[in-house]
Structures are given as C-alpha cells and as structure tokens.
Image 1 (cartoon, rainbow, N blue to C red):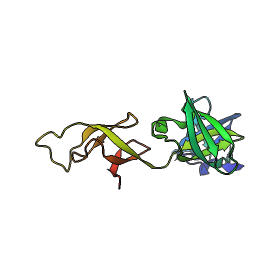
Image 2 (image 1 turned 180 degrees about the vertical axis):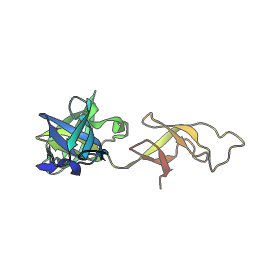
Image 3 (image 1 turned 90 degrees about the horizontal axis):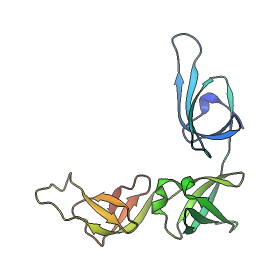
Image 4 (image 1 turned 135 degrees about the vertical axis):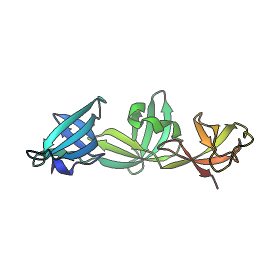
Length: 187
C-alpha cells in the first residue's frame, strides 16, 4: 500500500528498491531554505544492513502489511526454533537471528506473536515478562543500603541479572524479556 513518506514511523516495514526494510528512525528536517525532507534510518530485514534515505514530504513509499500469527514455541534444534500456529496448527521453523537477543527467554509452550510476510517470518515477539528461578545469588555485602543496591545473580537459563539484596537463590522472579531486568518476585 502506498503511503506518504512523512507518515513512516519506527517499526514500519517498507519495500524500497526491491528489498524489505524496517524503519528504525524517521525525522522531519526543515532546512532554512527549500522544502522539508524526511530523514529515515532503515535496516534490511533479510541482509541486516543499515541505510539512511531522504524522502521529499510529498513522495510516496510502498508500506508492507505484515500478518500477525499467535504461535506456540515447541522446541529448538541448534539455531532453529520450531513454532506451531495456534489456528492452522502448521509448524514453522524460524532461525535464531530472526528472534534476536530475547531468544534466551523462550520456554517450551510459550505463546509468541510472529509477524510474517508472504510466509516468511520477519519478527518474533515474546511476552513482556517471564518467570524464572534464581540458581545462584551472591551474598549481600554489609553496609549496602537496600534502596539503591543490587547484587548479581544467575537464572535457570544461564542469564545473569541484577537483583535486590533480599532475593536469594531458589526464588522465582519476574524478568523483563526486552532487556533482561528484574521486575519483582513471582507470586
């Protein structure tokens, strides 16, 4: 679908020069003289290269509509992860680089949002939080105030996080999947 360049926002997928690009940043620039332009920073969805493009405000670009699928994570085999569509029960194999860094928080049976274009998965969205158990937690250092201090700890999936001093090994905690930060103790 053709859209005006000035409507592009972060996260949109566009077809530019025969390739699919994800918009990382878009900024309207008004020079002292001349017409306004849209400066767009984009990343190639398949080749993972970045580019900066300037569009005139009246230019149109081809915006790609992605299809959202609710899929359940089944298992992994090396760098490939198998998901099952919740409505059609078809299985899809998605490479590790499409999922990105949050791959360490994938758990069997987890429901994820997978965006596809023409049958190819372009992104996998995990739930915002997961519950994991601490397997190691450093002891509290005397003299630290509880309000501002955190200690290193290791989760059951091997990821290291910073937790408050009152959290001990064996405790289940809620972790943010976007940045791997501690949120609270699990109830």
